[in-house]
Image 1 (cartoon, helix red, strand yellow):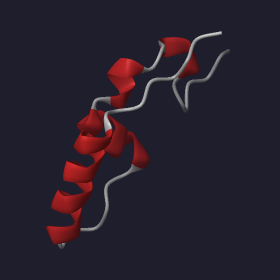
Image 2 (cartoon, rainbow, N blue to C red):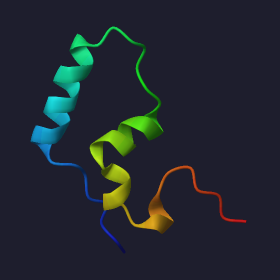
Image 3 (cartoon, rainbow, N blue to C red):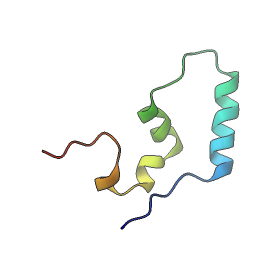
Length: 53
């Protein structure tokens, strides 16, 4: 079974610091994953929201 890799902690901390200063509403979870590069780290068959039809 493939192991899901998460972004490094320092990248997440930097993102959260930037978001804390931003007055805009929070982005969608998909946008957060894109900004952190999480989608590039996950195997395509384990990505959230994919439909297998």
